[in-house]
Length: 283
Image (cartoon, rainbow, N blue to C red; front, side):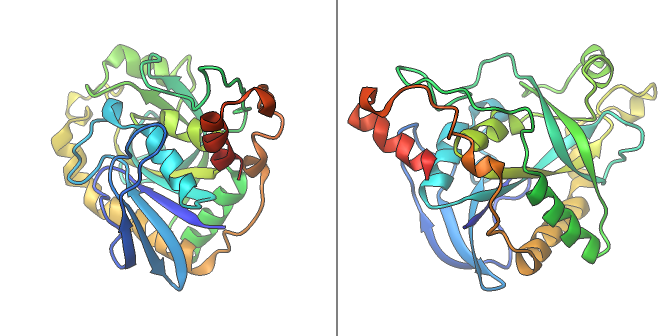
C-alpha cells in the first residue's frame, strides 16, 4: 500500500520530503501535469504530484486528470490525499477553515475527460459515496493530535472555471444544490480515483466566502485568496505530515474493489492495449 499526495494551488512541492527520484511518466491517456516525485517522510514512501504543474502552469480545465490519476496508479499508489483551495458557501465555514468533503456535485458542464472507459470498454462504478471514510477518519485523527480541527461531511461543488462565479450561481449551489464549498479541480479527479480503485479524500482549504454574502467587500478575488492562503496551506501540510508519520495507510476499503462488479466488457473482448491499462486499474 502506497500513499500519494496531489498538491493543489500553492503546493507544487512537498517540503521536508527526502526525495528519492523524480519520474517523468507517460500514460495511455497522455502526460500528467508534472513529473511524479517519490520521497520518504517519517520512513514511509510517498508519491507527490503537483495537480497544476510547476508554477501553476495549468488552469483547472487544462489539467489532464486522467493522466494524473493513471500515473499515480501506475507507480503503485493505492491511497491518495488531495489538497484544494475552495470558497465557502456556509457562514460556519470561515476563510482559513479546513474541511474534507464527503460528497461532490459536478457543475463542470461535461467538458472534461471524466472517465477512463468508453471506446469499446464499458464500466459503471458506484460513486454514491465518492470518498473514503476510513482515509478521512485517519486524516482527521492526525489533525486532532496537533490541535487542528477539520470539518467533515460537507459537499463540494466543482465548477468549470477559470472565471469566478456569479452571485446567481453561488446562491444556487448553496441553496437547491445543497453544497457547502465550491472549487474547480476535484471533479473528475475524485471519480477517476474511484475508477482506478484508489482510496481518496481531499483536504479543502476555505479561502473566501465565494460571492453569496451581501457585503461586496467579502466577495472572492484572486488577491484575497492568495493573501489568506499561505497560513492555512501550512496548516494543511502539517496535518498531512502528521498523518503520514502517525497513521497506517495499509488498510483495505471498498474503494480498493470498485471495479469488481463495474466492468461489463468481458476480458475476451478486450484488445491487448485495452487489457494493459485495465490491468493497471485493477491492481
